[in-house]
Length: 100
Length: 100
DNA sequence: TCGTATACCTAAGAAAATTTGGTATTATAC
DNA sequence: GTATAATACCAAATTTTCTTAGGTATACGA
Image 1: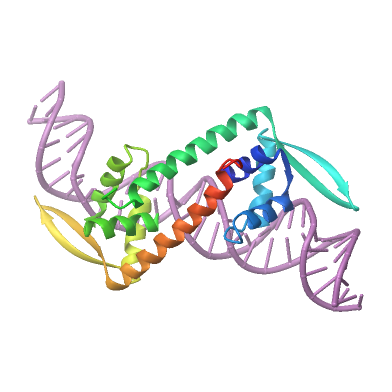
Image 2: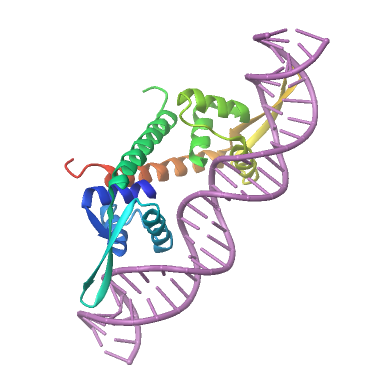
């Protein structure tokens, strides 16, 4: 989940929690569901680690907590996405039919 | 891990635990390490679920426990690999730069 | 006014992995 | 010859990560 969230924030600048869940649902046509129970604790951890910054915004009397990447968060994102890519390549090596 | 193991058994017919760990390490050039603490409990579970069959073989006085897919195991493999593919496609939708 | 959508959150439990330990044999290096 | 690495199996404790299930509150449509 972490590389997913970081990657989304990298592409979209800043997002709030609920928006992330909806965005992923739409992008993947319902295939992937980010549950709030997994998302919020993760966002809080990343904020505490200095990877994310927050700013509150009130829209129609509802609070939105926007998250964005800090400078070190951008480095971390690079790292996380690279690692994931390596992992996916390894996965392909295993799943790919031998004949390729 | 489950789809990885099932996929390997599908491609290679029958394998024993230690062989699986070595095979994955070689295939991925050390990138992916299957730890035995994760592997053996998984194999035992899959055997108990009727997905895998076992046969013992003694080579140089060392026991090897070979695992192979049962009939229902082949169906399960199909299912697991398909699900993983769907997941990976969703992942690509998120990680892919927007401009694609 | 009642359900759904928006928006945040936490806590308990489950699932899956890592870490660390154990047994035993064989091959290799010193 | 003896210690270390490699082969081969396994289990238990811990950690990590997710799901499930709950809670609060506002806004909107039927």
